[in-house]
Length: 241
Image (cartoon, rainbow, N blue to C red; front, side, top):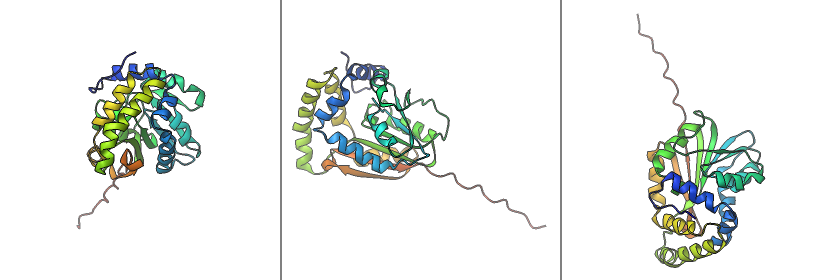
């Protein structure tokens, strides 16, 4: 079955995830030693989706995260460019749409919040995707990203890169319907920028109040930001007669 390369050609990445869709959630749980559930719960708390809000869950895969976020009463939409992943998650009962993060099929200011879990590192152009996401989020709206990151403590970083990534890859290969995909996933995790670099990219894309929270010693990090509110129109001035 196909695997993508780190140039992240969208067609290759989509085909790879189509091939990995069967058993993808189970493989992720095994590969992360069950920590994926804890990370998803913490991400849901950071997102704080409320009744009446519209939330875009981008790179949602099978919609497991979307269903988690919708429990609070918000209307949550799962979007992904892998038809196979969406099809595998249709039993979750959340709305789903095929979408490219660089060309989202939504009007400006459509969502109160947008979130991405373990998907942003698969985008071919991270900054362009963040700009496009900002377009569809309302002024003052929220962005929450959960992604693999870089442990700040040197010894843990060494163990993570030298041993844990290999162990995670092997576990994923044994439980995945597309074992080759997990070689790419490990490579993309190792090549992904650290917390501060991602925060700077988010800010450069026009988001404000960027902050991050390390999870599991920094193996994973949640980044949170806001879209700037609309500046008030200047009051007209009158010229004395």
